[in-house]
Length: 119
Length: 374
Image 1 (cartoon, rainbow over the protein chains, first blue to last red):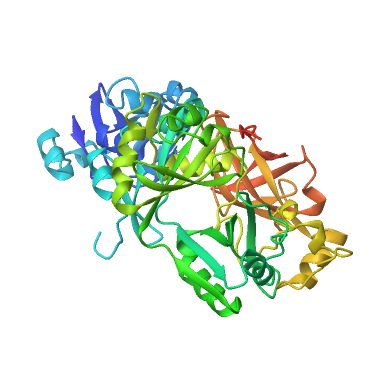
Image 2 (spheres, each protein chain N blue to C red):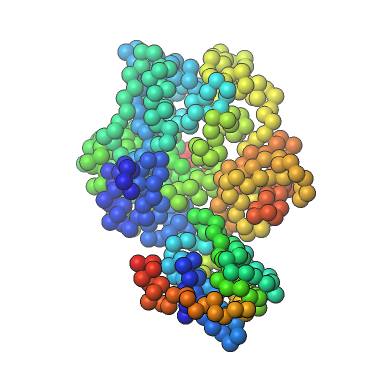
């Protein structure tokens, strides 16, 4: 699993990459009440704001971690945003993106580096 | 948090896992371990304990007694204070010459004195305003007292064993109760729409009192996050967001606090700052009104969201002043100001959320029914 400084995790799934937010991010956001996901088929560029998350505290964005095409989104978290607080690094993933340049992931943090980053 | 003030409960907040944030110059807990949503729901179901020691507590005295204080305060507020009965509290506001609101506050008649509770962010200004505007009145700020709020349907059962007598109080009663925590100044009121009490206590007794209340299994500590969503569902204004120096009390739908005796035709008509505008708005209606808003989708409409009459017009008809997810309503709720033409209940309006026009309905306030013991 790879991690970004924006508190996303990325896990390879065949040619695609599954993206979600970290437990740390979910804890910091507090109770999540609204999520807007990108359209399947959308072409995104790294750092595009493609997800809106609203918690009881505030609205925030998730940035596309890589260039690519959105191939699947997790509709279950739109129906029940609270799932992200319960299992952010498992069932409550956000979207799958097919990267156009997988090399963009090379420099991302591993788990140990991410833990050090948030410490 | 370098220059922030701490309340007398600071160490307890940290011990309880409070996440401290700056608020009105104080380090205050925005939430504890339960999180905003559960803290909110717990308060509506049982009882929540809030530290509101950052608010200003002030006693006003005059050599000629309460009526002289009330007469002077009526020159600053469009409220009937002379007829306030002993042991009772009343909501009101200081107005400015333009008819805007300088602060909203609670005034209580306690024997010969008036006890006033004002917002934290306004208290220095309020005290200066009273010292300048109340001739012959001594203005004493109580910097040695904490203020706790116990809110929720279990509040009476929690507080009565510790402070015998509070069970007999009705909504907006005030009283002084001698206890093992010293003299407590108690009012049956609050900022959540629930039954509950606000308790002024000497600072050295604040933590022992808070611990005694928290020892009850129905009581959880509640932070500012849930305080905000609770008051929003209850339709209560937050000074600086929903009301300020540019909003009149009539626009803010706070006319109920303006006694008939201070209105046109009343025995003590006018003679408060901004009377011309406020009395005219009472007679003819204001151009805009504070309303409740229920977004039809799930996206919260936060403060600052522009409101439009339809999906295409360029000119806003209003804006949101408070907006959040309402944990009890289980849906987003907002309040804001809107042109009178759009202010009828059930009118559909559109909020601009991230560039999209999302529908919302104008709704009666409060969103959740009040649980006061009247």
